Image: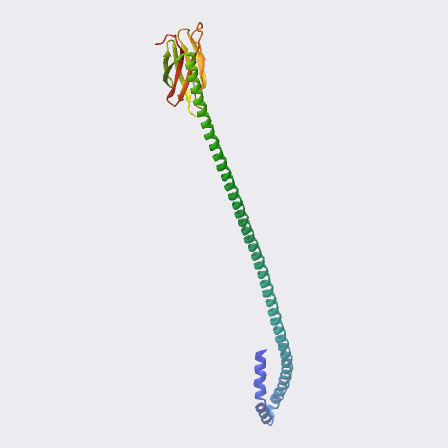
Length: 267
């Protein structure tokens, strides 16, 4: 199409020259036929040029229409692209907002849990302090009660010793002191031996037994405390009893005395 347009332009540009040459050549008889043929060709060419000129207007119209279509398509594509970009931006902003809200919710939850934990710790601390104060008060009261009980016990021991001493004087008995180590046996009077098996310092008591060798008998001593007289008869024929009294109980053994009636044989 472009080549035909160029050819038409060249012919149109040289048309006056060709017309002059045509008129000159028409004066010769030999060339009349040739001129006739050239005239026919010229007419055909001119018709083609007119057709081309008509097609050129249509081509311009189509080009203009194509330009409008292209411009419209570009505008539509631009609008579509802008719409897609706006939609993507909106989705991104919405997703960002949702994630931000979720993160803020999690942070608020963690802060709430920490606040609750701190409150619980404070309450627990206060409760423990109250319990410790109560325990200290109870311990102090028990200590006071224990001290009072020890004083009362010491008074009772003193009273018991005084009473035993008075009783010994009244019945005319003789006191025989002794000291026995744990797991040892000691003869404290003729035919009377004492064995200490175990002592309990906390409760001030001991376990053991008396061996009455003349009779071949054993008198068991279970949980015997201090300042408590234990009476026994050394023989079946005896009319007066012996009294065993323990005054001290330690981890090593016991210390005490035996009240023996006067007139009894002793070693």
